Every structure is written in C-alpha cells, then in structure tokens.
Image 1 (tube, rainbow, N blue to C red):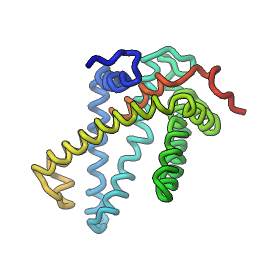
Image 2 (cartoon, helix red, strand yellow; image 1 turned 60 degrees about the horizontal axis):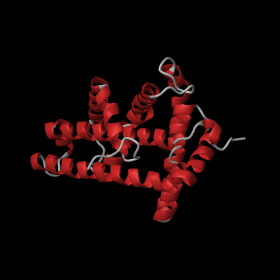
Image 3 (cartoon, rainbow, N blue to C red; image 1 turned 90 degrees about the vertical axis):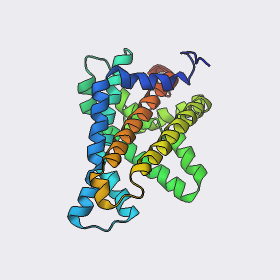
Image 4 (cartoon, one colour; image 1 turned 30 degrees about the horizontal axis):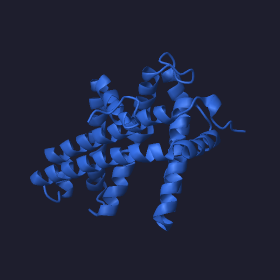
Length: 242
C-alpha cells in the first residue's frame, strides 16, 4: 500500500529520509552513541560498583546524556532548517539559533520527563496525558526559540487540534521502534546471552547492539520532527502567549 506524501503517516518515511540525506552524520551520531553506551560498564568496573540492573540503568542514562542533550537536537534543528524555509530557523543561521536554544530545550525536556514520570508513578493515564499535552514543548523551544512557558502553551494548543493525528503516527512509529528493539535484543542474545559486566564492555555483539540502538533512537526523533512539521501551524495561528 502506497502512503500519500500528504498523509501524516508519511512522517515516518520523511524521518527516515532525514537520516539518509546525511549518512555520514547519521552514522557518526550512532557511533558516538555506541561509545557513550560503553562508558557505563567501564565506570562500573573502574569504580567497582555492583553489577546490578539499577546501577546499569542509571549509568547508561547518565552516559547517554550528551547524545540527548546536544548531538540529537543539533541534528534535528539542522534537518528542520534544510527541509523548509522558516524565518525562525533558516539554513543560514541554524547553527547560531542552536547555540542560543539547545540548553533551554534540554531543560524543557528534563521538566517533561519529570512531569511524565510523576504522572506514570501515580497512574498510567495521567502520565500519558501529560506527555501528549506538553510533548512538543522541547521541540518548540529548539526550533522556534520560544520560552518554556510559550512552548508549553503552544504544545497544549496543538494537543486540542491534532491529538488523533499524533496518536496514530506515534503509535505506528513506536510499534516499528519496539519491534526493531526486540529483534535487535534477540540477535545480540544469540551471541552473548545475559552478558557479564566485562562482556558488556568488550563483546562486539554488545557494541553492535549499542550502535543500532543509537541509530533507532535518532530515527525515532527524526520521525517525530517530521510529524511536528506536519501538525504545526504558523506562529500567527497559534495561541499567543502572554
């Protein structure tokens, strides 16, 4: 079945094309993610921390922060600038805009994660509602230079207009992403089942899995960028923040 370019589901194909347009940069970010993921077992061995899932999860999260904090947002703002002419993010000045906005966008993402995490710890539905309501806020800060308050209001306004469209595409992208992760985990387990701390640091299959996992993370972010461009209205049509 052919998907029309005007369909929201075409965001998945467009997100994939964002990666293919700059294959060197795409592979470089995936390789960086692979290296950063290797820091977690290295730190566990070096500091002699216990080989426990909670420790591994915390260290992996901390190790991957530079990717989420800087490199993936930089990729996204460049892709947005090259894909369309927007006075708030042009091909000529996207690097300058990025340096002005990336830290504010990161704190927006941190606040979103904290709110959604708190909602999920209470009940599943409140967390998902918060994610849908304010999920676009970090991108609005990054791509359009809004303040955190403006971005939150704009994201909430987008929810009322586009929630059904967003839910469809995000669900489809999530199914693809999770399916790939499951297949990837299975393939890695064929070479090293339940890897030890030392194997996580040196085994080629684990490193390959980290590379592919980073690539999938970049792909998902790119698809969400393409979806954002489809559902975003011009700034004048948005709710004007005070």
